[in-house]
Amino acid sequence: MNKNNSINTNDMKKTLFYITFTVCLLVGLLNIEVILNLFQYIIRLLGPFILGACIAFVVNIPMRIVENKLQKYCKKNFIGKHSRPISILITFIFIFTLLFVVSVLIVPEIINTLSGIMKAIPDYAEDINNRINHLAKEYPAIRDFINKLDIDWAKAGREAIHFFQNIANGIVLSGIDIIGNIVNGLMKFFIGFIFSVYLLVQKESLKRQGKQVLFAYLKEKHATHFCSFCRLTNRTFSNFISGQCTEALIIGGLFFVVLNLLQFPYALLISVFIALMSLIPIFGSYISSYTSAFLILMVNPWQALLFLLVFAVVQQFDSMFIYPHIVGGSVGLPSMWVIVAVTLGGSLMGIIGMLIFIPLFSIFYTLLRMNVYHRLKTKNLKISE
Image 1 (cartoon, rainbow, N blue to C red):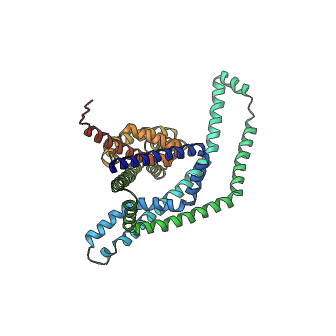
Image 2: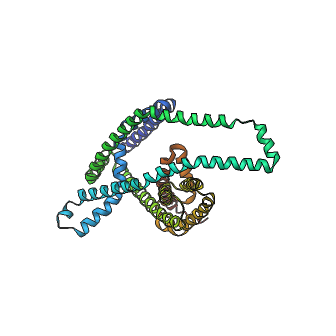
Image 3: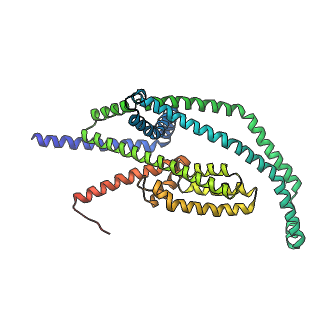
């Protein structure tokens, strides 16, 4: 009798849960715009803390390596006893130094590049005009076609100059807003930075408290499964970030050496740009190749064609010999699903979506595969083809 009552109670709980879930889902779908606005408001409100959590997660990857080395080689002295704060300090100093060095090297290069392009535009315009006049003399049909267009080139030039002057005036007028946004962004970054330091210092304590809350409010089975899911998520994202960063450094270094050997212009700027774009799987290489080729085109069109050839060769070498060993398999996701993840992530969230959807897909793929194998094993089935 008690057993039947227990079964009926469990059935009632499940039924109530399904009814409640269905009602909440319907209410959510009917008020989807309100829910999305509320979600965006919460994201903005918690923005600095979300940023801090992201900083802590990324910094934790190199920090663990530094901390393990300090504990291994300085176990009994002051450094070994205070390995956590020292490793945090060393990691942040290294990251900020790297960013500073890159900025010092790249910002002047960007300014020189833009200045060179602006100076080259009149020469290119004159060269194009001379070529058009030459073709018009050689081929009367082209001259007749141009005359039929009836374009006032002087007026078009004046309108173009006026257009760029309006843009410049708009930039000056919006300078106060830009400064305000920069100050607001710096404040959010500072709060996020402080929060990330607290997270890194107290990560074991926070982890223990989180597990206590889970096991206090959930069944042991569910809490254990959730902890396993969190470990899988942490491992997948850590492997993806470390793998992509290592790949970016290697590919950037390769291009820097090759471009300098072949005496390409803007070798440093292009190498850093390619390294940054390589963090975006698949589409990053296309963006970096065509953008870099355009920069070289402004200096030497033939070198731009040669660059595209060199880019294809280096990328092929990287995909065959370097990427599979450094990054390959770091997230355990087949190539087909990488393309799906990047495309879907880019459509929904832009560049950030391209980056985070690969590890998210990898987590889903791993969980699905584990569940499929478990079900097949339970049914005592083996599917060979």
